[in-house]
Length: 212
Ligand SMILES: [Ca+2]
Ligand SMILES: [Ca+2]
Ligand SMILES: [Ca+2]
Image (cartoon, rainbow, N blue to C red; front, side, top):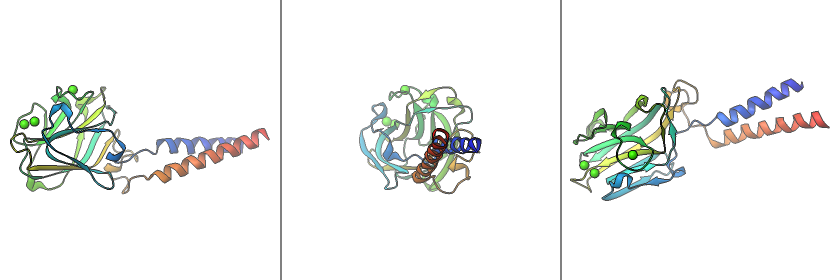
């Protein structure tokens, strides 16, 4: 009985601390709207549910979402652009906010060549596109900032982009990765809390039995 209780409390605490898969809620992160000194006009808006980030104008936004990539790390997101076709649509990673490492960026579209990895030739007519980018170029490096670029220096008021349902998964086929289609809903906070409570209950029952 003691062994079973111990097993229960160990598995409960294990699942509680590992049930962490979720799309990025942009409300939970520090965000800089002047990455690389690229800001000249516009701003960003976070959707009510926190899952979408919309940029309008001419700016690169950096989200303080720390990442250490391995060779399975994959970035998932939905992307759309409206208005005037931009010079650079891109996502990337950086350990600082100095725009000097195009090799850790992925250009999705735009009319300007940037030196970034070319990932797609997005056009406005594409509407919302789901991307999954294997971050193999970034393996073994630590990054502080997740960067979203809307560059349009020639027309600083005409362009917008929206990035939604952003998730970075290692081993995307694992059940912890929402974007790989394993789960239809983000894992909510209450389920994690519930598991923690169950774990604590088992711990208290176990130690009562043991030391009473
Ligand atoms: Ca940099
Ligand atoms: Ca620019
Ligand atoms: Ca430009």
